[in-house]
Image (cartoon, rainbow, N blue to C red; front, side, top):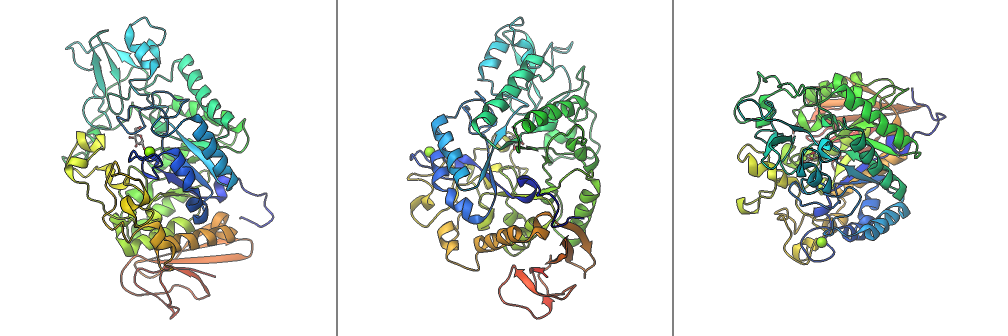
Length: 523
Ligand code: GLC
Ligand code: MG
């Protein structure tokens, strides 16, 4: 039971994370692409929102085959984004506003332009050969096994110069690193040290459950549920290419390193069923990541019955020492407002910010940006380009932040790298700042309430009974009990309890019913 005299929880339990996609936050040098100086200029927006930490998608030197998730130098800054001095300024400016800063660590693969891979591919006897995963062709000359890249096609690419294949779980420009090699592992842990020494508060770790592959690289089994129209990756179950015990051991080493720096946080990007997902917390004696990212609000149907089940199952799966977390949007997922509609997006905001667990918000969701149709000639996402027509299109959530109604929405002096949301002239930060009914106002109220009420930030959680279409729960801290009721339908529903409304997603009200698409926090 959480009590007021408990020792204060660490910031990453209490706080809220805000994801910035640097290419699309703010351009400061007129190239149509966001950059670090731009982020620094817009930090007041982030601070005023009321979040506690920002996580930056990768800002390292990169050929941008996968928009920064192909890193060519783990300890530098991509010139398009700035330089180390600009980074240090941004970090200091964030800290001056009480904001923590997390970087994106991409350990599974580097860019094929990384000097390590250039050395590795140069000859079979190069000292860095074994820093990547090279294998002889199968007897028929084909790839060494049946593994499929997450972005479609074989996960192997043949390199004629040395007559072997190398493994890439994503693009062929993203060769997988070999974490079984001690020198590679040491070099990657040094990368974490480099940024911790510079003062970063933690990392979001990209595809952490991918980093080690089963010894011998056996074929993956077929997925009986695959059907055309689903991504090609899902033809197989990634049994031998992901979630290996050795990867858990490495996560524990990363955690020990982070802990040696004090209050730092590791957030692991991990997509797995609950039982396997929960193992990434490790044990109290040998912890792994603080927060294995929980994407279930993104992946599941948006109705009260499904959400209730998802929340109950997730809560039940957590080990006693595991602090929950919730994500509702990202640079990979469709926009929440596009998925559930404008009215339910407000309910979603209340859900995200009143559940038990650290919430991660994605830039632009605080404005309710919805569907953005990307004209075919402007599609940039390599995953979409490789598997068109099945609705992957990650550009849809990577469009620039609309700041105001000036040309290019104040994002840039020139046409941005991706189009803006079609309604940017009215749906932008400046317009919503002056409108008390705006999504931005709702997010600010929710975040302020979460900060003011320990019951919301760290309190205990229990689901409550309610009418069909209503999701209800309570949060309890010491003597404070707050109750939340969310109407997942557009029709009025009975309020499951009485009390004082602290916050509603809609204006006015108070007639003892939950209006259509309304969410309330009550005392
Ligand atoms: C993660 C990132 C995604 C990237 C992939 C490969 O899923 O979020 O954007 O394409 O890893 O690094
Ligand atoms: Mg720029």
